[in-house]
Each structure stands twice: as C-alpha cells, then as structure tokens.
Image (cartoon, each protein chain N blue to C red):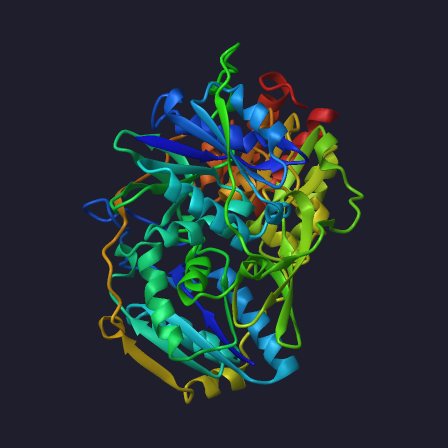
Length: 324
Length: 256
C-alpha cells in the first residue's frame, strides 16, 4: 500500500502547494509509505529538496521531452510510472492549474476520475470537496478498481505538518519514461505576463473588495467612496474584471493577486474559493452581503448581513465620522 | 468549421440551496436554473469563431427535461442546432460517467472543435472537457481565453497562475475548456429568441448511447461547510450596524 505524491515546481523550487499536498498525503499513510515524485528534464535539485522531507522514497521522472510542461508528456510519463509501481493505492497532487490540465486525463487512463480540489481527508479514505462555489461540501469515496487520484486545494493543508527529517534522507531513484516526440501534440509557448501592473495590491494596508453584488458598473462609485474614506485600495472578484468594470490588475484571487492587508472589506462578494485563496490571509476580514449563508462569512471576523446599497453609504459616513 | 459546445445547466447563482433528505443531493424543487457561466463563455467563443470562419455551432447538453430551457437560450444566442442527451441521473454520475455520455454523443457528430467551460458552478469538478478529449483521443488545452484558427491548427491563449499567460498551438480536432472573461457575453435578441423555437433539438436517450462502466467515485454525503472563523454579525439598521462595525475595527481589531 503506497501513496504517490506528484510535486510541482516553479522557478526550480518545489511549490508551497506541493508541500501542502504532501502534508495532506500523511492522512493516507505514514511518511515512510509516501513516495514523492518530481518530474521534468532536470530534477536533481528538486529530488534533493523532496528527499529531506521524511518521505520513504523519491522518484525522479526525467526525460528531455518533459523540459516544458505538456499534458501529453506529463500524462504519458506518469502513466508509465504508476504502471511500474504496483500496489499504488492513491496518487496525490496539488490542485494547480497544471494538474487540472492533465490529471483528469491521467486518471481516465486508469479508468478513474480525479477527486479534485480536496479540502479534507477522512478515514476510508473519504475526500471532502466544496460544492456550489463553497456553499456546501460533499464527501467522496473512491469506489473503482485501481489507484485513486486526488488533488489538494491550495491552503487547505498546512505545509509545516511535514518535518524536515534531520539526517535521514530518502532513497532517490530515477525513472525514465519512453516518450516519442510525436506523442506530444501541443506546442506550448513561453509564459508571458499580462499588462504591466500599475497597482500593487500586495502592499496595500487596507483593501475594499467588490463582487457581483454590486450588480452594475454604475454602482461602483458607492464602493469607491468607502475605499477613499478608509484610505483603502479598491479590488474586485473575477466577475467584476471579466465584465470590464475594473481592470484585471485589481483582481484578487487564484487568477489575480494574493493579498494579506490589515483590513479586507468584502462587499457583495459571495466568497467562492477562487477569491478566498487570494485574501483569506488578511489580518481582519469584514463581509457585507445580503446572503447570510454566503461562504465569505466562513472566513470573516465581522459581518453585516444586509443590502450593500444601504450598508456601504452608512459605513462610509461612519468611517468619516470616526476619523473626524 | 464545425464546433460543438458542451453546456451544463446549473442552479442559479443566488438560488437558496437546501440539502435534500438523504443528504446526497440538493432539493431541486423551487430551484431556478441557468446556463453555467464558463459554458456561456465557451458558446460566445464558438459563435465568434463561426462568424470568422463560417461553419456550424452545435449545442450539446446532458440532463433531465428542464435542460431544454438552457438549450433554447443557447440557440437564441445564435447556435444552429442542439443535441439533448436526456438523463435524469446526471448528478449520480461521476466525471468519467458524464464525459463518457458526452463523448458518445460527440462521436456521431465528428466536429472540428469542442468547447466547454473550464468547470461547472455547481459540482465544479473541472474535468469534463479534459476527459472527453482523452476518450476521443484528441489533444486538449484548458483555461483558454481566446482561440484562433490557423490552417488546420489552433492557436490559443491559456491562463496560467498569478497573472501569467501562455500561447499554445495544437492540431484539430481538439477540445478546449474556456475560462471566463475572454469575451463579452452577448444577449439573445428578440429575433434570436423567435428563431430558436424553430431550430432543431435532437433528443437522444442516455441509455441509447451504449455507454457502460460503473461509477468510480461515489458522493456519500452533502453537508454545510464548517466555519473557519467565529464571525461577529453586527445587526440593527444599516446605520447602527455600520457604527458598530467602525467601533469594532477601531478598538477591537485596531485596523483603522
């Protein structure tokens, strides 16, 4: 019974979310039963980094055709690795954009379906994930024949649960998959940044975030006035930027900026996980929302349940009065 | 270019959701339904590709009879015809089971391109498009904002994490899962709504698609989420709540 944890790197270092996935895998078995997998064209330093984390084994899946990520390349290489490791009970990933791109195809090759975006692992194992944008949770049990595939939501497990085992380093082996260039059908280009960011939300002390509850672009000045009174930057959830009501550079969340200000005041934001991951580290979170069951209240320190078109102007006045 | 857009009908975003007896599904009575928003972006991209390159946009949707209203909405926006895979147990099927249904329905169509949203707003598995590609043996790309056709190929803009993007080239036929925000969504015109009534909706029974395979992932229980923080809810009128909040932010949280 063994568990494979497929780590992911960025800029030559294992990503924090990958360590979180490793920490999550400890719920499936003791560290010595975990095999950390690093994948790419040059994986030596990644493997050394992983070997110091108290895992049983580290496998380097290495091939020149894995230098740049492709779904075809990664699926094929990991398929061959899993087939070579008989008795694999579970394959664990961080729930990254990259994993979302290939893991469903990889699982499908084993007649399985990925259990994605997991926030909790219980005995069984049973995997908990969110439904309806975080309004409910669902518990899923793998019932197929063969390894289960599961990816872990960013921030749901604490990376510090894995200790750096002093002295004891895992054995590192190399697995060389067989890949023919013709098997890689997509041609990925060099990553590039979007428009230059003029707003650095990351350094703001206070942020007012606005979401769908604002209904129309014409209503934005109401929230802008509050931001000004507070001396806060204005930010938004994705739909606001998708609609072009605020520029993309003001987007907070998994596809925008990650912020941790002293005060984050969420106005009309329901609190889908894509937004929460970008702001839940804030020191103090306030939510104004008409829906008392909105998931934003799960992370809020203070909340006002009500119509934002009444609450926000009142708040602006109160802030002004307090500041004298 | 023949494009199939796979669309899911989901509960309307603000609809109050209640857990049904048995805790394995949500109460569907009194629920309002809408087109899954990422799928609406997929439809928009398909319609724009058709405007540039001619061809046909076919809507594919699986679910019970109520799905018909979402199909009509897509037709009213400009899709040419639709296939409705009728199944009453969509919620009991796992991602693989749903993808098998769609792939089976797609085979007969042999389109050049399949578009769908990157994930559904209800179950949010975010896998259907990728598995469909795998089952059909086609390449795929996910989190796509724009697609451009170049002779026999596709050039797409893919969103990466933290504000990064990437261009990818891939051969046709292919499957793309679309991210929101790449285009502005169109509204159905009155003329469109009128025309939609006469457009072809082919009804296919799920059982007739010859899809086999038992579930590999079972949903055992649905519950309300656990709170991560104790939230102090400030009540009273808007003015009272605002005053109380500012006081708390000043003296308790000390963030003002």
